Length: 414
Image (cartoon, rainbow, N blue to C red; front, side):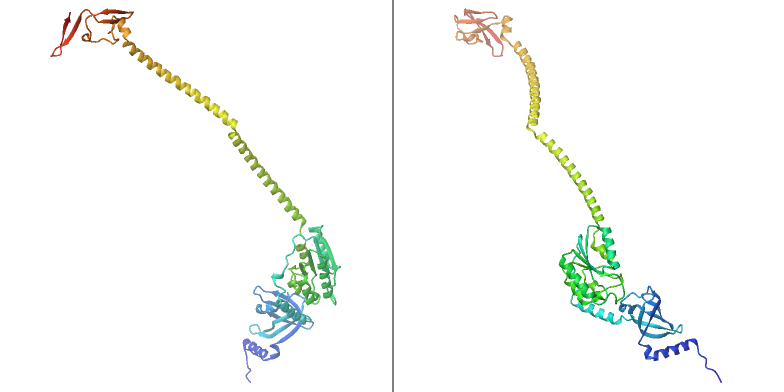
């Protein structure tokens, strides 16, 4: 009898079809402990689900991670819902996860998502309602357990950053029955007390441990609080309803203290820097004023009437000296010209001619006598000599006639 022989691929395909025909494996929920958990760069999560009796490989593709409400890690007790299928190439089956919930917390997550959606639709998460956190708070209210690590962390950081800040603790229950009501009373009490800011929080834990901060009454108390509220619940991966409603969310109580308490050393450094800058600006301003004052003094000295008078006196002296020099030059020129004119005049002087034997003759009327034809015989004449004068009478007239050819002829009248 001939045996039927199949290839590996055929067997894997057959097994895959068997899994595909089992409708229970299409939608199955499996609980177990997470191990070998790896977040791939592609966004997929590869892990192994195990219990005391066995293990099963599992993967959650990136498109389903949106529904994962927590950071999955080694040792988590989870309930994984998805399908069990065969990877035909390797002939191995694995769980393809579509939803993952912490074991025992599935209903709480549903309740959490429902309340979150309701409050968000009411606008309680809107940034328009967020109050600013005061930068220099001096009284800080704290609603948390009096013996937990949260209050110790806040105290230590506040003492390091600013020992002058007053911390007012309202010891509240943060877990278990009555925790939500206790937190609400603490918020109301500190709001009435008039602190600058309120920190509401606790350390990390499971969703059951943190559930008080997911209660609606806590969310409404935070939203209605007149004082700015910082929510500081759990570790960075834990997000509660109070985180969304609060005016500011801090990932840890320690971070909340960093945000609420201003660093006094930093302020002192700012003041020193501002003081140094102010002194520099003041020195610069003083130097500018000194320079301006010196300029104004110089200007005033220049515009001083006494200075002007002295300058005018000096200018007057200079002009007087220049005028005197000019007058001396003009006088010298005039003297020289006068000497020249005197020489010329001396050469034409009648007296000098008379000294040479010439005389000046006047008729009886005192007129100069230049023509012999203008006098009569016996007429009295005055003859002026170089020294003295003579009186004479005309006894003879000698005329000088001019001929037709221009020559002169003498004629005597007796």
